[in-house]
Amino acid sequence: MKNRLRELRGELGWSQQALADHLDVSRQTVNALETGKYDPSLPLAFKIGRLFELKIEEIFDDEPEA
Amino acid sequence: MKNRLRELRGELGWSQQALADHLDVSRQTVNALETGKYDPSLPLAFKIGRLFELKIEEIFDDEPEA
DNA sequence: TTTATATGACAAGCACCCTTTACATGGAGA
DNA sequence: TCTCCATGTAAAGGGTGCTTGTCATATAAA
Image (tube, rainbow over all chains, first blue to last red):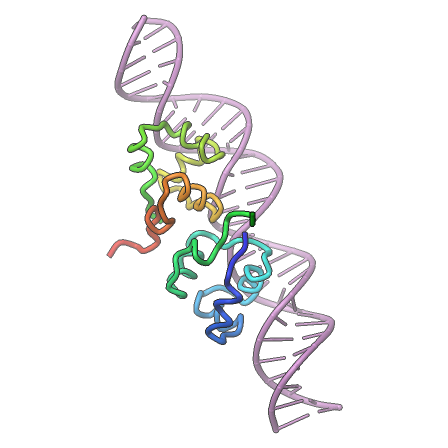
């Protein structure tokens, strides 16, 4: 599933470590999400949505493009 | 995490099996979600949202109640 | 050059998501 | 009663989410 994590993190000028701290996950988890290794759990997706003040659907794209 | 699956399924008058078929998961998975055994994966949460035409946040409640 | 920060990646381990198979119960209807 | 459907639950197994620890590389600064 595609996501806008890297883009959103960039807007804040945060490092992966800083984002990880705010989400209470490891830096490796943030890195894995950004590089598309796997999708977050639903609770983590909620945390991400709250942090960026966006709906989950505005951050993650479940539909394979076109 | 709380969810409105049983309520939404009830509105359609569907059995757990019927909902499971529409979501491409097993009946046991639907039952586990409704009885709060575990949360769905993010892709399954997206499927559920699309099926009911609701945002994920309108179906699942991440916040422990007040 | 040396040091520090940022990122990418890998492995091992644990817990969770979802499966299939199976069994038990309750209600509706023949 | 007998049968069927709906629901709840359990166990075993595979795949995934997340952890800690570690290593490698690149960039920037002193």
